[in-house]
View 1 (cartoon, rainbow, N blue to C red):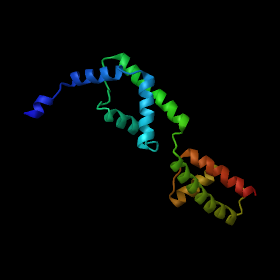
View 2 (cartoon, rainbow, N blue to C red):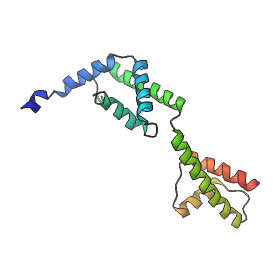
View 3 (tube, rainbow, N blue to C red):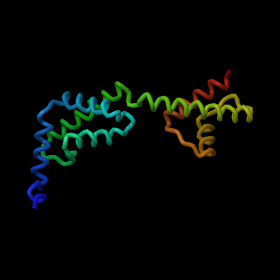
View 4 (cartoon, one colour):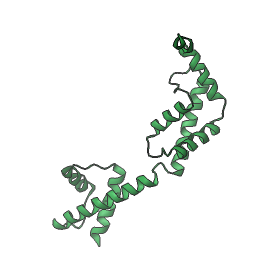
Length: 157
């Protein structure tokens, strides 16, 4: 019986969520989300996960379909402002940067040894991609470009 009493019609819950979102400005919500990310050390998580966690922590489910264009627009503005702020203080955490640096150093050394065995003085990105395929390793495009630059710089010396 207690469960039946606490049951809310989805429209009513949605209206309450919309009112709570309207209570604060875009800037206030943005600041809260950024502080939440810092406090909870969530910078390594994908943005979509951070977004859901924040709104859940406020007791609000994400409003996917809202009758209020103002609320939908406000949520988009909040999301864009948070993404800009997160980019400003770095979406890549210091821990992640350190992991990537170690990974690149390790891979660079292996690739340089192989290139020198094959008497190559320069490698293309395709050469690196083939090497990674052969070793079963994968890198995001951003790291592949960094690795390419590091390897060729070292091979020239």
